Amino acid sequence: MRKATLAALLILIGLRTSAQDNPLRAPELPFIGSAANHIVLKGDSNSWEGYQRKLDELVFEGKGQMNIVHIGGSHVQADMWSMELRHRLQHMVPGVRAGRGFIFPYNLAKSNNPWWYNPEVTGQWTGLRNVVRADTSTLGIAGISATTTDTLSTMKIGFRGDAYPGYSFDRVRVLHRMDSSFEVTAFDPDSTVKIQRRVDLAGRYTEFIFGRQLDTLHLRFKRTDPTQQRFTLNGIILGNSDPGFFLHATGINGARTESWLRCQRFSEELGYLNPDLVIFSIGINDAHDPDFSASRYEANYRELIRRVRLANPNAAILLTSNTDSFMKRRYPNANAEAVRDVMLRLSASEGVAFWDTYGVMGGQGSIRIWESNGLAKSDRIHMTREGYAVLGDLLFSALMEKYGQHVARSSKP
Image (cartoon, rainbow, N blue to C red; front, top):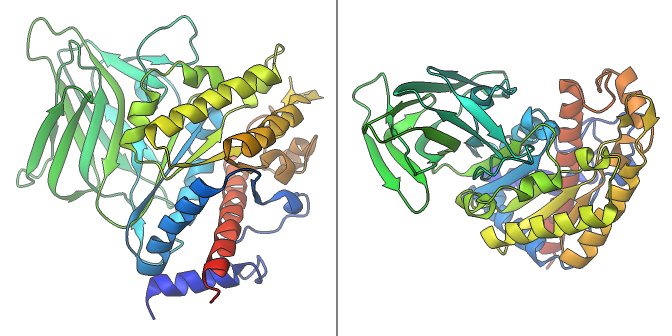
């Protein structure tokens, strides 16, 4: 029996197996709102069914690639929640893994970089983020850019950590501005590695094809003409042809729905990721605004959904409600329930799915319990690494439950 088929059978029995014995389900904690841990679809489910049918090919035949894009604020920028979900997905089917996908070297913009990959750079760089309202710079799917005016800069990116034994790639797209941009080239310490380079002026990226798979990226940014003033980096996509999952995570500390609407190239660059599923975790910063408006928040999300569908009309979309949080560490944020209500309305009217992070945590005030169990930080907004891992496990469990139901329906004669 094929390994992928064995994995599919495990999914089929997943709903009947206790969490203690089933790697597809999250560990049970007494304070978790397990009754809320489900993927909800209130409207048209065609895009979700299309996503699950494509997943069938990967699970049953070990073929194809699934691209999942997770977009949010600080909950996503640190790549701890996304990391756990990525790790679980990439170990779901034995021997089927794929790669890392989209990354941004946040440390170039003087912001916190995910621990799992380590950009080493030379030269001076400055950053711009989508949370700066007065800034009109052109941004894309990263929501951030980094610029250097040095005549020569270099970058080295490798991976580290027990959950990241190393990600290999043999094709790379460097997304960057084309006006007055320097030349970007890739190189490798092993001079026998063949590297093909192609510049796409219209797409605003430089692409590299490597003669074999590598696990460390070396880039050089060089001024080649006196008229060139700067190089602006918008992101890097690491790809390969291996079957499996790519979970592309992109988050900006403090980002709201309106922040992502400032990203003029959002749809075009999202299209480069070929999204099968887009997960939105945007709302915690909207809800902490004293002037929070549920109607404005809903309108912003409708526009974000529209922009996803410009990138891929068939992409499934999942909205995750806010984590429970406190205002100034003292008062429960009552807007979390308004955010949840907006997302339920969007699920019905826009045909998107919904996962109730707020309810799964335990509802209003639950952040205190998470904090006392070492799963949330003392600011009562952010999780610890262990807390984000629990969120990743819970979301993975809900996704697998939904897929298990699909497999059970499809297997009936």
